[in-house]
Length: 172
Image (cartoon, rainbow, N blue to C red; front, top):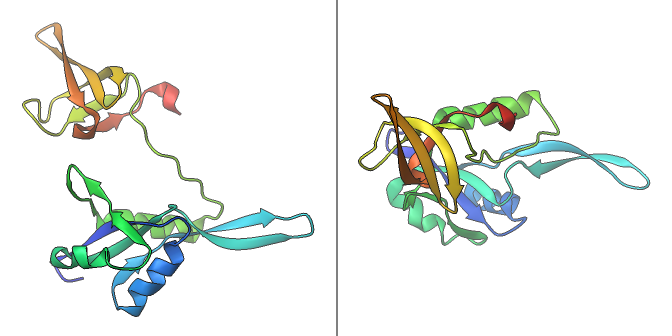
């Protein structure tokens, strides 16, 4: 991999993941559409089929300059953004997905939602790198308890600016 190439995610039309991946491959663009081996039951038979693990997503490895050309691909709706910029997917995450799908079939994907009593770290703003506990959730804002000096300070921070460090026991 060239040092200037990174993995990104593109959002596709519904059920267009394989077509978009094939189009990228045709254009010699490195891509990955994780396919999950699933057994489907019909009234007369069972069949193992390959379905996209992440519906409407395909991963691509391109230089940042080439990102906006991807949007011209038939079936691509947009780039996946994080905090207003194209979301970079770490190589290790792509490798983990590949390894997991090699070893397992009938994989289920669930989003990781922030919930009450999760321990989080704030990633931006004046509270950068501060850790606390989620005590309230309202729309896209969290109320986080930040213990210090024997007192608890409460701060409202955007959901997008925190990462979960530890899930509350009730989440699993």
